Length: 88
Image (cartoon, rainbow, N blue to C red; front, side, top):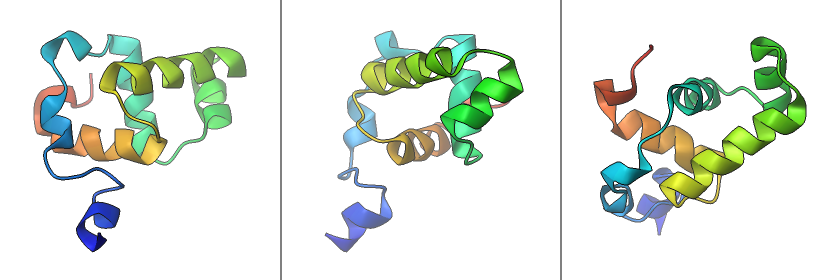
């Protein structure tokens, strides 16, 4: 259980089940990187000059594509990808 908590709630191997069809768009990658940086939806919207609802939609789409439930899991998944989703 402690291992699962330290992995952001993801059991071992959960990120390996995400298929290549779950590839993020350039904008989703940009927003996921901001999530890794600890930015809130409001911060993301301000930084990208988009509406808060648009930022929320992007985050929702990211979680759906990756079959995740929380932002922290997105951050952990991004870190697990290494250079695949490095800064554009």
